[in-house]
Image 1 (tube, rainbow, N blue to C red):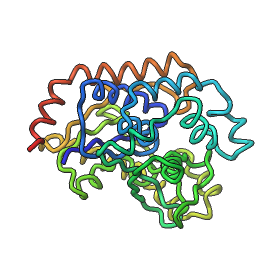
Image 2: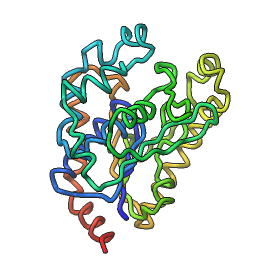
Image 3: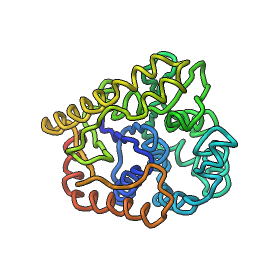
Image 4: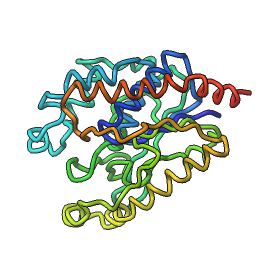
Amino acid sequence: MTGLVLEGGAMRGMFSAGVMDVLLEQGIAFDGAVGVSAGATFGCNYKSRQIGRSIRYNKRFAGDRRYCSLHSLLTSGDLYNADFCYRQIPDELDPFDYKAFSENPMAFYVVASDAVKGGPVYKQLLTCGKEDLTWMRASASMPLVSRPVQIDGYTLLDGGMTDSIPLKFFEGIGYSKNVVILTQPRNFVKEKASLLPLMRVLLHKYPLLVDAMARRHTMYNEETAYVFEQEKKGAAFVICPQESLGISRTEKNPDELQRVYDTGRAAAQARLEEIRAFIRCCTP
């Protein structure tokens, strides 16, 4: 089976959105997709086949304090306002196509982090209804600026804390050929989290999660090394920016969002024939 693996990275995810829109325009389909954090919140639009939706609503609401703001953090406990992002936008302001999502046979998974056990949790989303959206919110709930999400007996935070690039997970459930979209360049090496001392204080209830964050740079660098090993073997096709995207995780400038989105589009367009060949060789 063919898979699409989507790294997170907050507004670096506009790169992934650009790549995905080109793939959608070209009618390129996958048997399944898995997204982490922004990879989940933007990747759901691949299953609903809504070209341009991610860049459209992000540009529209980038400067809206109901979307991402200190005001939201102080009044709701979440930098990205949960009600606005996961109800008002998909239900009213930029409607999400729940019917298309449900009817598309492509499986769609998200990754969140179990705050108590300090490990990743994987969840398949079937309808993108209220419960599924809560899982998606959990996947994108950045530490220190989000409340832990309670659902199905779990206490969850951002999936990137424990599995930033879930290629091994996808291979483990049968997706043997995967397109992997990264939001950092090939030469990127993650360093130890600079805010770890603050995390130890504010997340003291979750010591195993803090321990995971202390090791996250090692985990991330091992995961990227594995991705490129699989690429050499022909089991993965990697699309990533040529250089650092240079965008803030909470970027509010629509022009910057458009720039990074266009960078993703250009990256996909430049390699379309290679992508098609990779997908064809995987199709029985």
